[in-house]
Image (cartoon, rainbow, N blue to C red; front, side, top):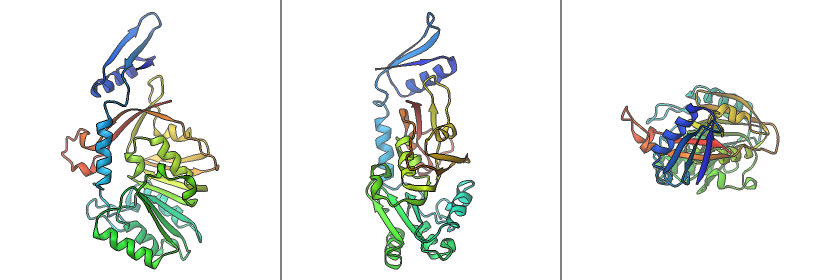
Length: 295
């Protein structure tokens, strides 16, 4: 059982609604003597485990648009990496400054359209830059297979591909220090462990390297119930500077070898298929909702 305390009524009512919607057995009341609200809830992970399982089934099916290139527009989503406001300009600027042997690691990768654009067009500015991908599961598509074979054969020293594990499951020593780590609706949008994933993506950078991520919102509150927000959370990370947060884009520059990301406790998780969908969108365009409390 967990006991949570709240100083203001709005925060108390937010969590009360959240926990009731999660079908947790709770006792919530106002302590007149100590002048604060409190509630007692069962294990905060029990009720949303089915949603986490459904989320990972979606990931294992690669049930997302996978054909975005750097500039090549996706036929399913109509967008490219560089077309996203905030994310695109930040990624382009850093790519154009890359030098020989600088590494770009993309978390996700899809069908490798972006890596093909990067290595076959002018993004490397004549430098022997390297493109790498970390992917949980290989897309079972002809586009992926063709791109993977082409990149492996034509750029054997400038392309690497790691699959079968989440980035948070890959030891730091196994990834070469990168100049850029990008995450376009990848791990940070679907993980139940935003803190661990952010830690590993920053760990994968060399000092001075840049993390460029476009992610869906993660709702964070402190222990008093007040909203904390992704921007404030990123600014609390030790060893990295937050350069931008806006338009769902987070840009961080690594300033120190040691990264410390504040730990979070997950208090609710709703898979994309269960998110309210008033516009009847295709489920592949729906993102999970994550709610956290700072530990």
